[in-house]
Length: 364
Figure (tube, rainbow, N blue to C red):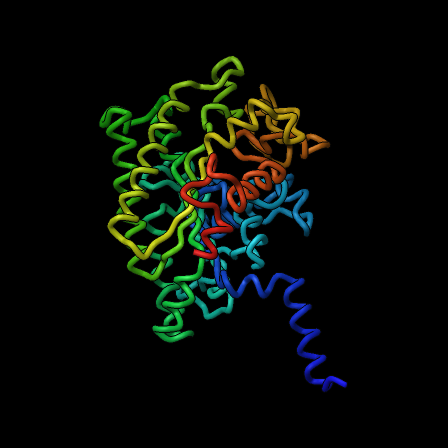
């Protein structure tokens, strides 16, 4: 007869396996950088920010049924990705920062932190419309503080091992492009579109190299989606997609992919998964029925033309069936759409994830 201790250990192993904890040991943490597509509530802590989602009807389908600061009716892509590697959702960095601006000690710094912020861009000036956000440069500065705390908690060698196995998700760039094509844009007077996207790429490269210098080795980097087809853009163009915004999204994505290849040749110890958001989103728009979606133009929550004249605020109305909408509000995908994209990121084919998907990246 097996000793009770052996039986107990076996039971514990089975429980951990089923709960996903064993898998999470191969991915000890997920660190999230980006904009409102993956913001988990950082903007709730920014007093001046106009880009907030900490009120109904946001969160109506979140497990708690309440708004969290996510720009969604439920979970976003970062939440789904964390689930797939057996980890809890990364918590907002600013929720760990005391009024003295000092980072408090927390086990959450080990399993993952979200630095993402609604309105953020690669450049510092993208938050002008929303008054306040955390640009990517600042997000990387915050990560450096988390890195230092991990060294204190785990020791230098422990932190290095932990971070080398962790995933670094970067979803950013849309706000930079929206800012360029805004009718009141000042940057469009300073740069040609090509100069601007080239500058986006070179600036991002510098920030990724800083992250690498702070232990990051496995990157999950999303290209920009079909931004000219979001309800906010369609309503300006007789419900049709804005071709110029889409064209320059593809040009930026081309530059981003070239950048990642360059980084791999310069820094042989990194691995990455690039998600072709543009093509994946185009596929949903062109063949929505394949994904159980019937509405690709109008937002679910809002008011007016395409429900994009007024954003998703408490006085707005929202659709009863969120699962058949691509867009939750005038800019952001529904929980259903985010789940579709996260599934492709994790286990999709090389049509959408290059040179590997996240499932393969975890084992790299």
